[in-house]
Length: 382
Ligand code: SF4
Ligand code: SF4
Image (tube, rainbow, N blue to C red; front, side, top):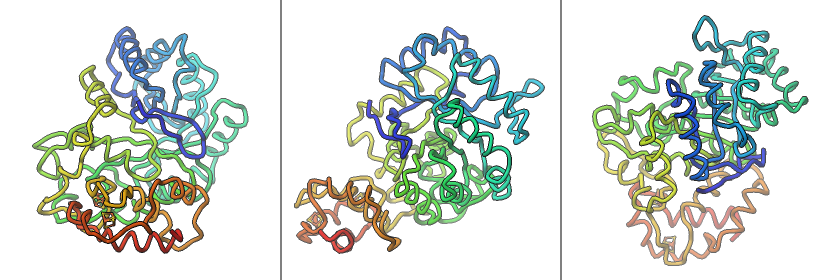
């Protein structure tokens, strides 16, 4: 298992993590057995948004005696009403739901208190300026949550939340098909056929800005919907007309800037294994570029996808990393020390490029790499 630092929280989390909604409808014994297996494989991070009491209790039972082995991301504003899940900003309901969460999990605190599902600008204003954020801060002051997070599917809202400085963690929907779409506060657009009816080119700039802002400022991203709700894995439903594997989807998400972990919802042991297969997958198995290159209606021409296909470089440069670090500085603002440090730690730097052009023939997305190396060398000074 690979462990990554979740932004400025400093928490070290497993790159493959558990989205616990997949455990709904399982017995406590089945949930505990899945936890045994996941923990054995090195998983140390889970997300729980569900408010169903039975599910919360089953996860609490699975954690009994080993609470400290999991970093828990528990959601605020996810309540249980009349036998159903409900998203609510009603403070009294949120308080009761959080008290219920930690009681059922058998713990005094969760590492991340995730303000649940904020997709519209108006809702974000209500959260940031109203009692929900105050409550989250109070929980943090009391040590009942250690860090504040927010989950969203809308890059404009997510960026505003990150820029507010109120959150240290963002849970965001990341996969190659959503990345093509412009922002929307209607989550349904992400999986409606109409959204993919026309040609789409390049990562939406607002999404790119979001990832890069979070990377620069230390807002850790953990990922939901890495499989596009399963559509990307299916021949028939993938907007690309060809499926990706779970390993390719996970690799894609993990190579976006600021992303530390992918929360995978696993309904069966086979689905859990398919996600954990990322840990031992070969570069060829992780290679999502194969599935994305040469599509008729969708393209990422000239845009670095951080896929690493351009390797090997004659000068030994890790081109994908140079491009990633350069893109974090391309807004012209002073280079953050963390980015400068990451760049410095590379074994070879952009200035070592001998312009042989070998990488450009290998790049499936037509990136002008020689030019990128030249600009990166100028920006970083070497
Ligand atoms: S330059 Fe091309 S091949 Fe290299 S990481 Fe970027 S997209 Fe992939
Ligand atoms: S052109 Fe530069 S970056 Fe590309 S392989 Fe040659 S030396 Fe490496």
